[in-house]
Structures are given as C-alpha cells and as structure tokens.
Amino acid sequence: MQNTFGQILRELRLEKEIGQEQLASEIHVSKGIISLWENGLREPVMSNLIALADYFGVTIDYLTGRES
Image (tube, rainbow, N blue to C red; front, side):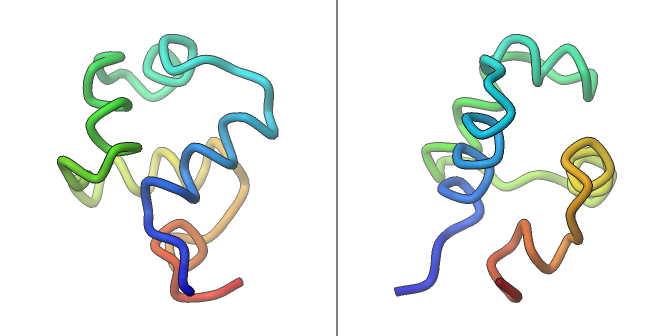
C-alpha cells in the first residue's frame, strides 16, 4: 500500500525528532495546518510542498508518495 502525503510527512517529522509546532515555525505555517496535513484533512499548496521538500531534503515526488 502506498503511503499518503500525511503519513510521509509524519514519518519525516518524527525521524527528525521535531514536533508539529517546530515544523510549523520552520516553514512559516500554523501548527494546526501541520496537523490537518498529517491527518489527511487538507493538502498543501505548492509553495508549502517546496518548503517541506527543502526542509527535509527530499523531492516533492517523495513527499507525495510518487517515489520511494
């Protein structure tokens, strides 16, 4: 089964040992939006995907589950 964006984001965040609040601060969004993304209730806009990919050092394809 392919991981969803929210699952991948949570795994990357936990691997880096940071909380939702710290990640939110790093990419300039609210803590609530991180929770919504991780729970699959919202999807990020392109600028947020780019910020997340840059922060975690992964590709957007990786974040969205298109590559492993």
